Length: 252
Image (cartoon, rainbow, N blue to C red):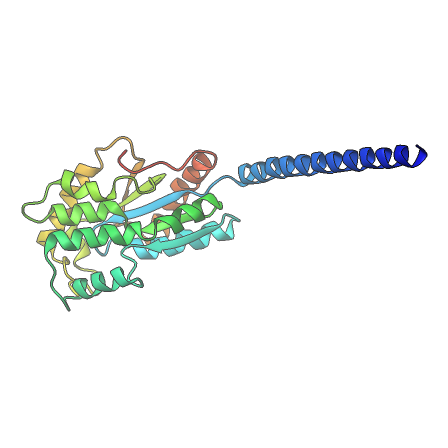
């Protein structure tokens, strides 16, 4: 009887240890989940900041200056550029833009959109990690440039990009196409003609009527440093506002 009692007691003790251990693990997993959530919430997400404008408005220069300034101030930031010419789709686009190949206009438009979609998972991942993305051209350029061609409506051009990450700030660098034409290397790529750029500018003006987006129009004829200061100010505000908001979906 003594041995049976000891065996039963041992079994009960073993069961107690098992359940206690399971409970501790469950508590640990629960606490880890809470800690992980708090950690994500503590840094918030990054902001999606887009620079748009006609060709040679200074977007690339200002994107680089903004990213450097944000990093120096302790804010994680990276630059992205569309089209991204490093991907297979981007290489097709690059050959077209450099006038090395010809493509039907509908095909070109869908390639530009596909180039943005192939990088959508990476964009979303970086934003969720708290990295702000400064983007040199986005879906708005795709829509403005294609709809500037005969036979294309804004509505048709917008459809392929519906659902992409929605920018928290769109900075439009305003520069008259004739002034842009005076800047270096103008005309080396397809679409770089003053007449066509005038129509592109009109399409951008139509897109800017969308009040669901945070458009800010900036005079790109300013000095590089004055332009940078204004862009940086708008961007810092957008980063603060976006920090604990969900990532939106473009044109939805």
